[in-house]
Length: 258
Ligand code: PEP
Image (cartoon, rainbow, N blue to C red):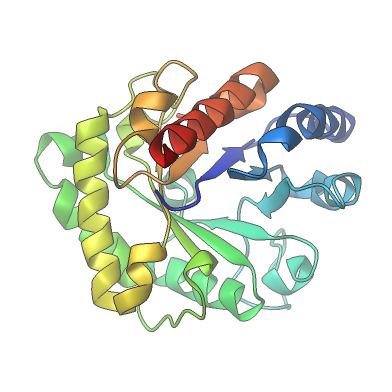
């Protein structure tokens, strides 16, 4: 198993004081697992700086939920990767809510990815099929299109710089996670696509599963050979749930070492 990455996507939740308090609570509860697993939280942009300062010196890393493709300019409401550079570790690009609700295209996501890497942010790129696409048996076609388009022209210095989150849209926030076998199979396809673009680096790149991950299903997902962690939405908003998901991941890592 590659070193796992567990990322908590807070989406548009918490006020600034609530987010800060929650981050400090996670710091206390999660720090002890950091030798075995990378933990990242993705708070809303308005509280990122505050939380980054509060977590300084702690192994929990922070990430933005989105970033623009330009460094600066007339882009009202946007946050540039240049503004995040140097203190924010990760950025999530291509979440299905950005694709669907904010009409982000594959081409724009490619530009965002390139811009983030230029500023040395580690990227979690989300891909995934909708329910209609899943039911029509089009998962492989959709994933191939999304991934190939997003990484077009991208060169990586390190496999850590880019992780892929496979998030079937029908599993996000629905309580209906993909089965471990199905997720593993699709993530195997993602690994083969990464090999096409990044050759030898691909075997070390992390592929996360996202979509209704809970303490109850975390272990069976993490046991899969292609699953290197999770992008967690709803369950990342509750400290006991998020902690249990991390703990389950650590237990899988430990069981594979013996
Ligand atoms: C997500 O939003 O990325 C996500 C996976 O949400 P949830 O865990 O709530 O399904």
